[in-house]
Amino acid sequence: MSPSELSGNSLIPSFLYSYSSPHNHLSSSTPLDAPPSSTRRSFFVPAPSEPGKIEMYSPAFYAACTAGGILSCGLTHTAVTPLDLVKCNMQIDPAKYKSISSGFGVLLKEQGLKGFFRGWVPTLLGYSAQGACKFGFYEFFKKYYSDLAGPEYAAKYKTLVYLAGSASAEVIADVALCPFEAVKVRVQTQPGFARGLSDGLPKFVKSEGALGLYKGLLPLWGRQIPYTMMKFASFETIVEMIYKYSIPTPKDQCSKSLQLGVSFAGGYVAGVFCAIVSHPADNLVSFLNNAKGATVGDAVKKLGLWGLFTRGLPLRIVMIGTLTGAQWGIYDAFKVFVGLPTTGGVAPAAAPATELAKV
Image (cartoon, rainbow, N blue to C red):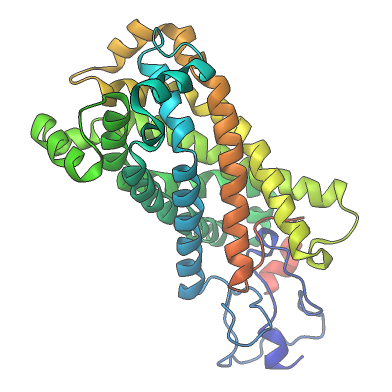
């Protein structure tokens, strides 16, 4: 096998992407002690064969994933601002916003059509920043933890890799989101507080100080970290099962439109699980960011445990399911656009330990 052929091989972590080629595995005739060349590295994955495309796990790859995350999260969260607005108000003032339909009616009567997109600027900027960190760092940590584990254990415990990678990424992503989320909730739930981010941010800082912008960070982590762990791990698992049990054709032989359809379907189902897991913390975030000086104990006392788990949940399931499906669809569509494979797929069996030791 020539060096040019070796450059298409995938040694780690091959289970993460089903981007097969005729040279996906080293043949038994390959000299394992061959001297390194400029086209060979210790661990690498197949880059797209088209000239000018992006090599997997290169700096350009992570930049592309970051850009895809910005589009994925920023656009989708902004698009569902009306739903988010009703949800937040149902959580804060259930006596006034008794149901989804009546909530929309109250907003329309009091604030008009423009009121449905109140707070869209902090939503767009905040969730764009979060998406950049969420997806970009997820791809980074997924590769990093796979390399730490080694090919055999990375394939065997791939779900743990997904969970650890997504949790690590979300810790960073929420630091970027938190200030925007604090202003967004205040603007959406207190009419007259501010028109948007430009006047809302100075008012918030003047009222509660700069550190007040991070008052909701711990509840935000409590909401977003379980949400993101479920979002990524369940998505990867669902997509793998779809390709393994529902689609007779190997992933690399499926059309791009079918692969993107699988991404949306897997994302929607994952989103339903995400909404249920993270909803109590979502209620806490809305309560704390709305009431000055409020504590978690105050929220539990006012909402009650049942209300903490169920208030606004049906709307959030619809919103998060659609949101997550659209996010994965947009993210993978962007990856396809720049020449990268879609996320997830059937995981090949790990190489035997004796063979890995030789490599």
